[in-house]
Every structure is written in structure tokens, then in C-alpha cells.
Length: 185
Image (cartoon, rainbow, N blue to C red; front, side, top):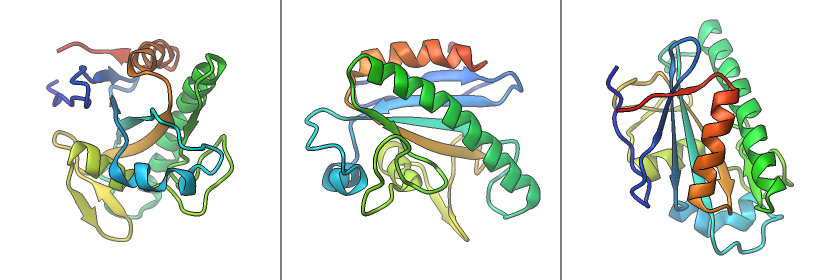
């Protein structure tokens, strides 16, 4: 399989993984988008002016193109959300145990899972568009278009003040515990 390379702002390699079902997962670490910088305290009111934030983008390949609202698509979105929540909680608590403020954003609501909800929700699709420059289809809900998977992509976001190298190291260990194997290029 040929997956596109995604580089973080530090020019580190992305983490390309594959799940037990053969569906790909891409994880990349970025400096925050302008939206997050401008609205951090309105999205995460518990966080007071963190000087060093990183955004972890988790893209899961879906079995279906996520453009139509069908029973199959909705149950697939729920399955991918649950997978992200399990993975994201493990990653967030591991980084928190090391003393780094970390939270994951619930893809369904846009609100943080481990902090008080802010005045405004986070927009995962907008942040992925801003940081990875992926196009967005606007229909009932906005859908990302991945260069390789098309609209069969489920985005989710984790925000942390941990250094990128630590996020990457912990991510790889936790991904393996969740059945995601790293693939090399």
C-alpha cells in the first residue's frame, strides 16, 4: 500500500499505522493552528496560556466514504470514535502521568473530554484542513478529503503541552497496545 507522507512542522516523519482490519491510521504532531492559538482558553478554559502546545492529529481510514448519512456510515463513525477515545484516553493519561497537560477532543461534540468544556467547541475538520491542507466537502456535515483514502477518513484531535519527541514515543507504544502496527515506507 502506498500512503502519502505527512510531515509535522518539525519535519519529523508521520506515524503510519495499520489496524487489525487492514485499515490505515495516520498520526502527526503539529504546532497549533492559528484558531487554537487564538481560542485556546475558550476551547480549554482550564488551560491558562500554555506557551508550548502541540496538536496530535489522528486520522483513521473508514470502511465507507463518510459523505452520506446512512446507518452503516453512522455506525462506522461511532466505531472509529470509540477506537479514538480508547487510544486517546490511554495517550492522554500517560502524558498527564508524566506531568504534561493533555486532553482529547470528543469528535462528536468538539469539547474536551478531560477538562471543563469551553465557551466554543473545537472544530477537528477545520484544524486538519489548516494544518494538513486537506480539502473539505461541505454537505450536512463537513467531510475531509484525504489524498489517498478520499472521504473515507475519520479525523480526531488530541492537544498536549508535552514535547513532540515524547508524544511520538508514547504514541507508538500505545498504538501497539491498541492493535495498530507501524508500517515503514
